[in-house]
Image (cartoon, rainbow, N blue to C red):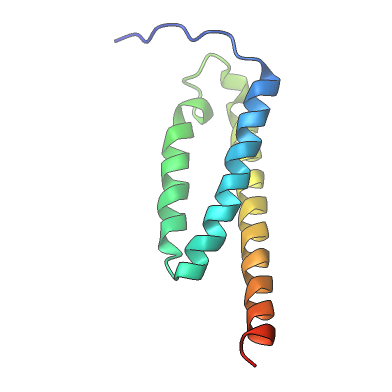
Length: 101
C-alpha cells in the first residue's frame, strides 16, 4: 500500500518541532527519574528508534541522509539524557540540603 505524498514542510518547522520534543523529553526524563522508574526511558527511546528506522536504513527517498540523521539523533538523545540526569542530580542535592534539615 502506497502512502499519499506528504505536503511540503519547511525545515524551520521541523527544527522547531524537534526542539519542542527535546525539551519535553528532558522534563519527562527528570520526572521519570524522580518517580524511580528509569525503565520508562528505555521504552521511550525504543519507540523513538523504531519510528526512525525508515529514515535511517535507506528506505527513504533521501537515503544518503539516513546515516547523518541517525548521528544527529544519537547526539540529541545523549545531550537530552545528560541534561536530564544533571538536572535530577542537582534537584536531589538541593532537596538534601534544604529539605533534609
